[in-house]
Length: 244
Length: 269
Image (cartoon, rainbow over all chains, first blue to last red; front, side, top):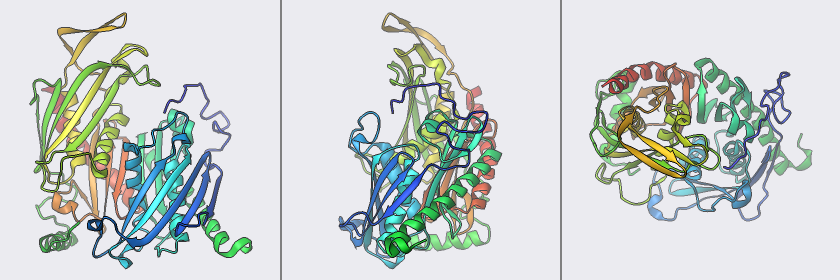
């Protein structure tokens, strides 16, 4: 995406990363539920430099009708980046990358939503990336899951996502943009924290089997941290400032 | 998507057999189908292969041509891998722009090979920031019986291994091809993709089309020569427990090693 090459130190001798974080420290995460009036459910997330809006409609009638399923509902998901969300203007038409991310986010949400209760209907999840940083698919998923809960759609569990990766031969939590570009591996993971199931996992980059195991476990710890923020956002929406 | 009676019966049979640790075609759960690779099937392509993985068949060709490098990657050659399902491969396949499944297929196949660093792209530079060699790998699925991820990946790897790289000279902005001179592409490792499906709590390797229709979820893991993991993609409408993820990584390393031996024979011939 046209990033200029600089000699940044990804990990210094004190174990501090290029943005000042420790190896197991996530970026700042802020989620607000119920930010849109018209959507049935919505959420806004700031995850590092990511700024993402998610809106959910449904369960509602499926158009076109042939997409409807007689025994269960379906989810449709659109992950879309605004042209101004990245350094160089992005063509607003959906790219192959966005189509793939839309698909993996949909499949990461599906296990959590009780679609069998809503045959012949669709739940539409729209995600707009207003500003992109590393790990936008995880942040998008976090917002989408909160938006689904905000819409009151029955769910088995929350879906919490966070990436881990390998930077300067070290497994670190929550890869930022520089670490994604210059690092050795990036592994986004989504997790249902109460059911203990991983609903999204991808990997770019080389890991030994031991590093792989550590990387999965690191990402899962991150997902658990995100889960707390998601719960807080929903409590604030439904119980106001009284929520702890 | 449209559940017919036949599909329903097949599904019940596949699930029932799995409970006894069996599969409809008699394979072990971690056993891939027979892999047959013919290379050099398209002489006009610099590299090519026809791969049969059970009844899934893929034809793959590699074209090599000089190109301008990507603006931010002036010190690297170009490597692009695509995949498409031809309309003659399956009754449900249609011509036209690719859907999300096909886009995912192409991107996962590309990512596995790219992330492994199979081809050393730094050796494909004719003139830094000005001219590089591009390797374009195009997969066409000609017959569908499940697991296109692995079939296309093996076809791509076999095509690259069999590829002859023409020699090019760069001189003040013009690139000329040296007729009749070829080198082997700069290969650093042989990536092997292994796709596993989950039905209930059973993990099966290399699902057929019938099994594919029953999958709760699937995962594709690509490993390199050293037995390290270079790419992962999970799909499907269910999740994996962390323990199952570890199990899948072990299966992919063990199965990958066996398939790598088959692919290595292509490199030698």
